[in-house]
Amino acid sequence: MPYQLMKYCARNVRSIRLVIPALLLLTYLSLHAQTSPSLEYQLKAVFIFNFTQFVEWPSTSFDTDQSPLVIGVLGENPFGAYLEETVSGEKINKHAVVVRYYKNEEDAKNCHLLFINLPDAKKRKMAVEALKGKNILTVSDASGFSNEGGMIRFFTRNNKISLQINLDASKASELVFSSKLLRLADIFKPGENH
Image 1 (cartoon, helix red, strand yellow):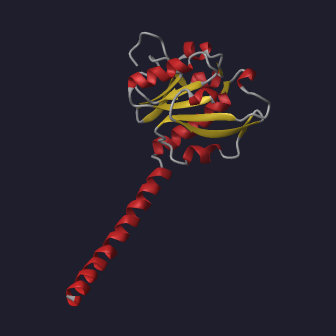
Image 2 (tube, helix red, strand yellow; image 1 turned 90 degrees about the vertical axis):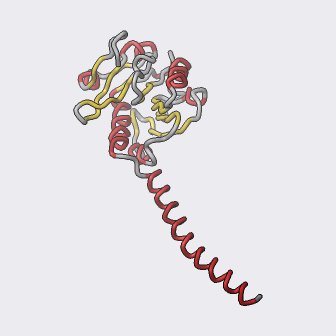
Image 3 (cartoon, helix red, strand yellow; image 1 turned 120 degrees about the horizontal axis):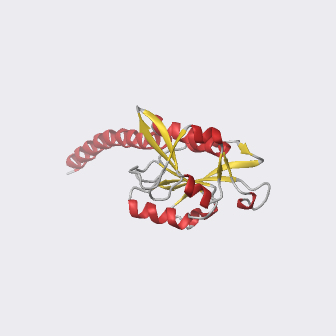
C-alpha cells in the first residue's frame, strides 16, 4: 500500500509540474492582452485624447477651475491601460485629464468625453438618449452610431481610421468643435446610411 501511495503522489507531482507553467503562461497572456490593445485601439486612444484639445466644453460643465476633464469608457474597455498612459500627466485648460470606467450611462453623467463600447445597438441607443443634452462628447466605433445620435464615430476607409461628426448632436450638448477637427471628418447628414 505505501508503494502505491508513493507512486500516486509522484504521478500527481509530475502533473502539477506541467499544469503550473501552463497556468502561469495563461495568466501572463491574459494580463498581456489586457494591457496591450491592438494598434487600432492605441491609435483611437490618441485620437480621443486629441479630441479634448479640439472640442470646447461650456465652463458650467466643470464644478471648479481645477476639476478634472474626465474621459470615460462605457462597456468593455478595448484600450487596456493605453488610454490611461496616453493622458497621464496631461492638462487641458488647467484641467487634469483622467480616465474612468463605467458600467452604465447613469454613472457616466459626470464625464466630459465618453467612449461607448456597447455591442447591443438598443443599449447603445438608450445610453446616447440618456446623455442627450448633457455636455458629454459621445464617441464610438459602432456602425450606425451617428444615426443613434452619437457625436463622433470612428470608421475605417482605405485601411485608415476616419471620423464622422454629427454636428446636430454636438450643438444640442453645447459643444463646439474646432474647424481643424471638422476639416478631418465627414459631416453626418441625417437620413444617410452610416
